[in-house]
Image (tube, rainbow over all chains, first blue to last red; front, side, top):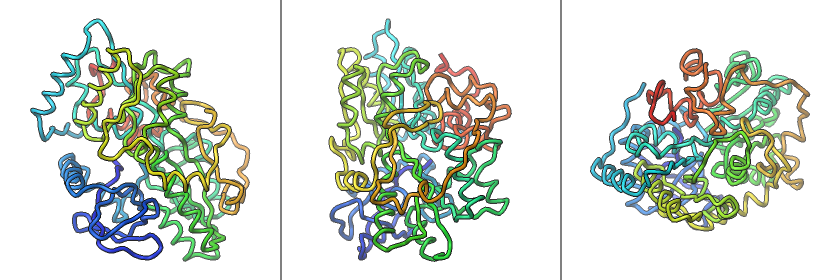
Length: 87
Length: 374
């Protein structure tokens, strides 16, 4: 299943890009759909783009539910480029 | 078959189930369409249907982007790769969908076409930069969640003068599909309300559903993806039905606001405009239900750069995917289901996509006589 996954901003780069991390996976993503993004923000990532900002609690809550449902690994594989999906 | 996942907080789920049982009026049936394939999977994965009273039914909706793309558009994409020799970049879940004659992107790739799976439009842009002598086409599919990333890619390509990059645009719109399902004469016999999609609504907000809710007098509750969200949303829908209300309510307030992500909406409006009509698998030709690339971005429109041939496209015979997408049939009512059509050997898109209703039935063991088959 291909949901959006929460990730934490490690660094903000030029041209609306940022490096985020989730469960020890790092990914360069676009922040072109958000207004202001800062290091330490939690973002909801879908197909390489941040859709929405989340609180730390909400990000942790979502990740734990995804892990429990067994879909966290699928999502991590996807953002690592192994099994890309769209929805 | 996978095992149904246990709720982390079983007590909370049972508490909600009890409230739902007490809320329903026994002499009334409640048919709720979950529009989004993500909700279909949450319902199956957690066995939510089994926690419902017998008069609460889920009707599975068309919110699976891979599923609603008609065969003709897939055939056109295969043709782009095979006849025009482009590098075709696609999201992975399109790869195994059978087109006419059961030809898929993965078969075309095996036969030598240059088809590449990408995670993001950013990857497609990178491929275009690295292959300046080749034409690179991004096969864009999806609902409102996936459209803004395509808009950003087109704007980046324009800014970089990336003249070998185009987009084959198949983006579709959720509110138009909801209205069409309610209008369709051969749709589900009854829909009493909708569970609205989570991440689509994060982008467009909750207000685009208000017109349909009022016009058709059907309540809409925008629901989060977790099973407890779905149950809470069902309870809210039951409350509305019992009170004779037809409003848009938002259960997923953690992420969804009334007006959504305005920056994303502005980017989409800048790059895309409405098509007069668009063909959907299952729903047929739906007016103002899809987007096309605006004239000022015409250089990035694959449909204008490459002429698609006339062809006779057709579904696999006997595949009930179209009726399943309308909510008119359950997957188990298809004679191919589970026999010749399985996730390993899919005959139709609804069995390919992890978001498809057939894949959900198959994966979570709903092969026969579920109580929701009524």
